[in-house]
Image (cartoon, rainbow, N blue to C red):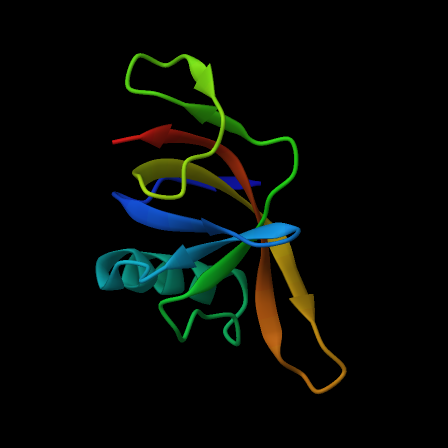
Length: 103
């Protein structure tokens, strides 16, 4: 498992997951460099990324647990747990949000 902490993200709660809207281009570049060492076909090609979101911990500025607030910017910790390959050969990362803190 690889842990990664993007600088700042805007999270949108979906039915079962969270959407990172407008993932920073610097974060995409760093992750693609990392992914190239794991599997040459593995890369992020867009700025919107879906994360599995169950039993996540959201924190305020003081580090206390709070409920999710969609109007805030967050710093999050992502666990990259590996990758999956579709029947068509498309390779994508398997990741989960570990925690999030309001900026």
